[in-house]
Length: 284
Image (cartoon, rainbow, N blue to C red; front, side, top):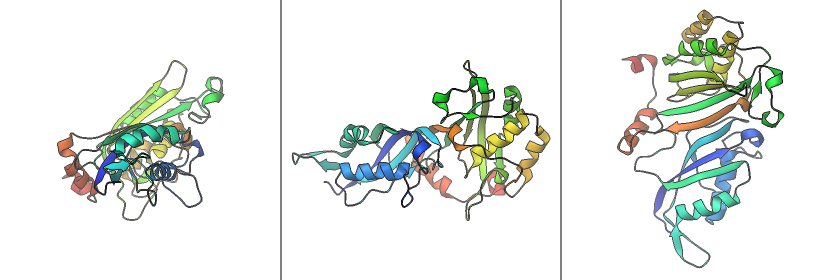
């Protein structure tokens, strides 16, 4: 195997039902653990490689558009002592080796400056709900959440628009040491599909821990008539996690897509995203 390291981009999807989440944890099944383990086996590495993903999903959260980078040798020795492109080997073998709840959509050489996490300029999630028991499809029970009250979808969308922009989303986030809760919410849309499923699309430059599920808890409270939009707007003035915001179940949430800038801007974006931000600095 060549010792020259190359950064590879992996585009993956997974059903999060059986996982503790993205991040590897001792004695628990994780997406990171399964994926890194199989990469290590396929390439005959001494230990699983370190993976970096665009969004560290929680237990039960799904993904169609997760992006991962991993630094690996440029070439790999095959069974016939032939050297092959490592990406080609992974693209051929990974989809066949991985369990059925993980799929690899592509393996490509990453452009210079690419970082799956820090180069991203937006993440798009979709949360799916049923608000009528008659609409529920038992075959989709691990991807769509049953909501106990009827929801006004138009009101939900209008309320979501109140939150768009650069704000401190501390009321919606689980506090982590040294972590900022400043985010730019770029998009909130809600539609009721023909099968009566409600899909809420939420897009931002980044999300802090539990933010999307907390946003959904607040928006559905307004859409169900339990809270009003003044209460919702007031959440943006809080500096601590709001106890009156319900965190909705994980299994309704799917990471659908991650966006990146042009190749020439990847490194600059990564450097910018690593900088700890404050609300005052962002608005300057």
